[in-house]
Amino acid sequence: MGQAHGHDDDHGRDHDHDHPHAPIADDTPLGYYEIMEIAVRELLIERRLIGADEIRRQIEVLDSRTPALGAKVVARAWTDPAFKARLLANGRKACEELGISFYDDTELIVLENTDKVHNLIVCTLCSCYPRPVLGLPPDWYKLRPYRARAVTEPRAVLAEFGTLIPDDVEIHVSDSTAMVRYLVLPKRPPGTEAYDEDALAALVTRDTMIGVVDVSTDRERPR
Image 1 (tube, one colour):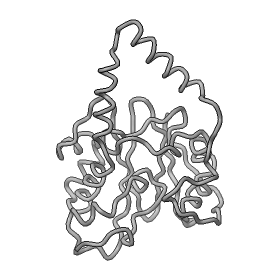
Image 2 (image 1 turned 90 degrees about the horizontal axis):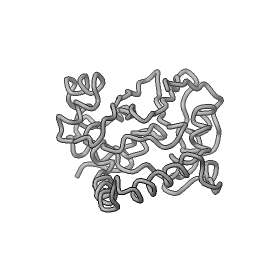
Image 3 (image 1 turned 45 degrees about the horizontal axis):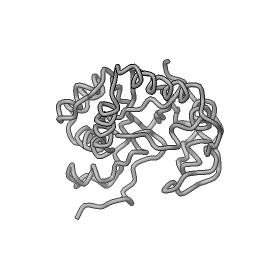
Image 4 (image 1 turned 90 degrees about the vertical axis):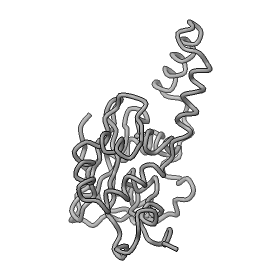
């Protein structure tokens, strides 16, 4: 799937997103792909093509990945123009430079936010996500309301996260696939010229690298 572009009217409500937000809550039954995943996994175990222990080991690998890895990548890109150029050219190879291994064959495309473009990440079919650098996706990312509305009304969705995008800023919605994942390189906030990489990384959250919020210096300050 390529990229979809949204140009919707701003939604006027702000919410604190340290908790789930009602507009994209979902209590509907499992969808087709979730049911298929469970059925295939159980069939593979039953046929002894893959063991429960192997699945458990893979889950442990996933659990070891956190947004701190992605934050490290962002902080390096903010402070090293040459690394940033390599990151935008080939996200996976640049991440591997920092010792971040990829346990699958997925491609990582890094999209830079600018004064004219704001990037938002979604997976409309299921919940494909850059797990090697962000870990497990948040629950709201996997819900059908977010997956649908992020494409059809991205400005409204962003407003519900408290992110109001000016009318003259274009929103690019990138749809992840089984083989292509996206990571947002958010804008470096002003007033952080004296921050070192560790202090900058402390500002970067999972949601900023999905694109639903901007980086703020209110979250953390260098000691």
